[in-house]
Structure formats: structure tokens, C-alpha cells
Length: 134
Image (tube, rainbow, N blue to C red; front, side, top):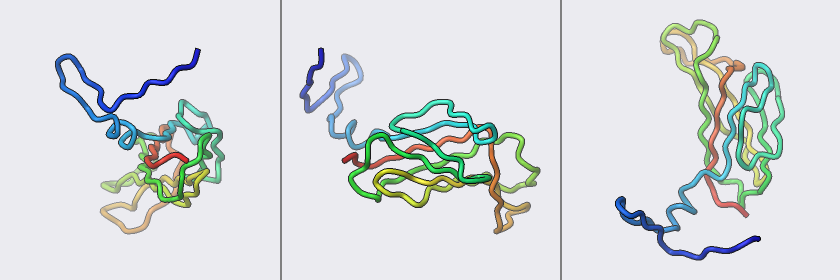
């Protein structure tokens, strides 16, 4: 049986109350966790498919579209068996957004604060997308 709950606030018995607009606008509308080194999907929300676009690159296709291409994302690279990068940093990037997909890039920076970086398939890749669904 389907139902509909209409509320302007959610109240906890000891922690206070929260406006439901905060929940609607502040919640991730899509996320993914996968292992690009084996092309294995570990878990996701609002993802219909993911394509491997080459080393360190993929496209996430959404089940439910966003209302515009201005959604924001955070892409996180996990430290795994990446090449030794000295004091370099892992880098994740979200780009190429449309209402139905976003592209992810992941890699590592050069040694000693270098300005160049290389794409790499980390074992534990994560991305979270925020925005308004259509």
C-alpha cells in the first residue's frame, strides 16, 4: 500500500526539530561506490548504470534525472595500491554533467607537490551528487 506523508518539520524526542526542506534540499540525490580496477559496483543510489571510460575515467548514468546540469558532486579517491607518489595527493574530479549523467576522473598528483597528475584506477572509488531532481 502506497501512502503520502506531508510534514513541514521532523521532531526528535530529545534532539529537537528540523525543517523538512533541509532534508529535501540537503540530501544527496545520487551516490556511488565502486572498484574501477575490477569494474565492480559495490553500492549506489539513483544510478542506472556506470561505464568504464578508460583508466581513471567513468560515466555515471542516473535513474532519475536532475532538473538541470548544475548539480554538484564530490569524488573521492581511496588510497590503495597506487604508484608511490611521495607527498603527492589523490585527486578526484566531477565534470561533464548533464541532467542524466556525470563523469568522474580520479588519479594522483606528482611527487613533492608537483602540478601534474596521472589518471589511475583506485580500488575504492566514491562519489556523491547533490542537486534538485526533475
